[in-house]
Image 1 (cartoon, one colour):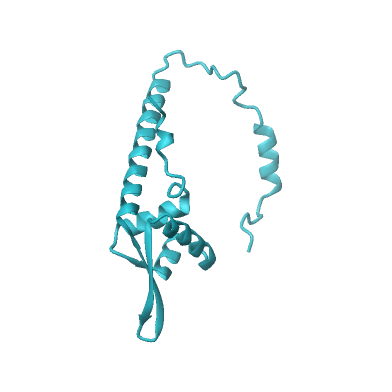
Image 2: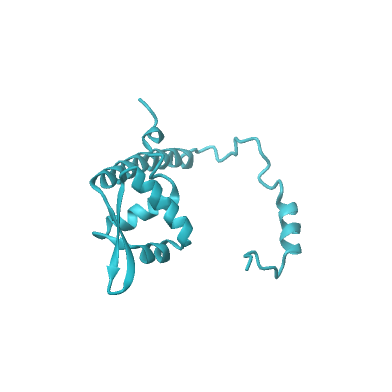
Length: 141
């Protein structure tokens, strides 16, 4: 029996592309601006991921006008819906395995750390680093 990770789709598994298809699974279609805002992407980043999904046959992109405004609409195809369903199935299988492994680890009645690592190692180092950055903004503006 193979591991469920072999069933993950290289195209759709990437976080942004999975997000795009997930949004599209909820609606008949979505416009470019909506996807950009919902997924917090730049125009270029969204365009590139849509291009990859379109080349795989997972989405259909149509361009047109609404009044005088250009609009780009994106819809998931049947192939895209099938790929999304297969991806969700593989992820559920992985999650089920992880849940079983976590339950088994929690049931370990010895209560001992068998990893061989000191659980306090690095604590002082992290504390010193944290003190030195007090008040610093970790987000570049």
